[in-house]
Length: 261
Image 1 (cartoon, one colour):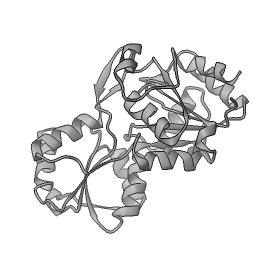
Image 2 (cartoon, rainbow, N blue to C red):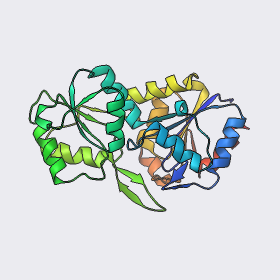
Image 3 (cartoon, rainbow, N blue to C red):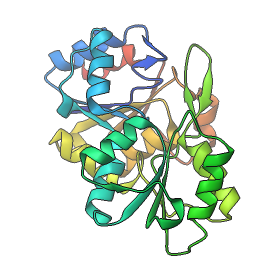
């Protein structure tokens, strides 16, 4: 089968920590040489699209800002569409706050005054943050939105750190309330964002990622050919236990260009 587009996860697929994974740069060059539209899509909401452009550029991967999406992008777009006139309280990173402010969203520093409470990855998350989340959600009318479901994310070699999903879960437990909506992969909003950005029919696209419940799930829901790589948090034994079944399982992104032959 010939492909016209590819969605590439970043953490655990293109790079791990601050270093590109072996063969990743050459693989991306091969995908571009085959005239595929390339979209880089991360569930990490702590960097802006320009941050990702700079980060990838430092690794030798030239990227246009239009070729990058993140959970932060999807969350910002959702809030702009559905809650443009509401007051938001954010438990999240400065970069996500910057995205909200750039989009013209209104942020409040009083959780009890918020119409929408947004929980996301925050390296400064502490007891005070959890308390603010609890107080903000005591009003049943307050909408509870999470940026992405990733409980852990790859850091350095063989290392994991807590992600947005862990923080969302802590606030859910404190408030005794489930989150209303979770953005990022594999949400319907993320599927729509990816297909719109590529501008290629989903059935003509590859989805490459290291997570079954986010990357592979998004690809399945979009109708793309899915490729699981084993350079992130998933190993082969996990595939047998998952409700999501990748079309291909490969050791790394370096092996993906072989699918084009």
